[in-house]
Length: 388
Ligand code: MG
Image (cartoon, rainbow, N blue to C red; front, side):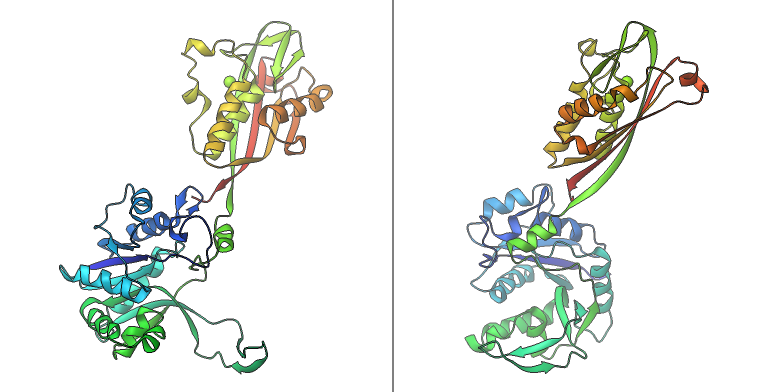
């Protein structure tokens, strides 16, 4: 198995990005763009080590972005991408790997399987490099300075090159050293590492990748990429009847011939909703956060539990899309209190009442709810959280 070091190019200043931070350090949900890229490479079999090329002055941003990753020390980039990569290659040459996988920090959506396909392609004996890319799907036009189309370029055999671009280390280092000696005009035409390898006569092959592997260039790209993901989770709870004159349901006190027994105010509806919300962020259940053995929760109003779960969701940058509750009991009748209960849950959750649904059913006299021994509640929470 050949050794392979990933060289991540994160030295760009991102003039087209325009945000307060260089794009590689901007947040994608809860993780930096660079951090997400590193996580994919770390999880790719065949990539032994990772080294990042950064811009001078970005050391603090870099350290914050790579916390928790086991990486070789960063390398300072040069005045151009090409020279940044050369700096990286020279640093790796001290203890040269067999292969180097050069990858843009700003391509965080690369798939481990596609990197693996590149590694396999470069393993062929007559191949010096393998580049991830996709066939061109759009029609290609040549346009003059004033916007007039002068030519439709046949797109047969045209591909868009992405990264990673994986090469045998020694020939690529030689090719880069040769390219560094070129004049500015000639060097500018070499816009990726494959171009440098091709110029040196190396055999580079294209490996079909995925359209997801886009490069984050503008703030709009980042916004598109940060799209939240939707999650749904379920909650369930039961409380038994006990002597009393009212039951708490959805934060509402409803007069009844009995009360509900339980450690807090026994609001079975809010408990089911709390578990549903906790489920969306895989944060355990209500008993984990508010142990029944803990005396401080005795008699406490259950809106605290739901607010706590919603607070955890908010800490993760998430928000509630919808809460759906079903109460299962013979009595009390829920229908007359439905609208007030929707208002109450919406108020506790801090969402519009159109995002809350309250339903009720009996079990036709069957089971413990049919025997009027208690109330069961089922809840489904739908939330949006930043894509992790
Ligand atoms: Mg409960």
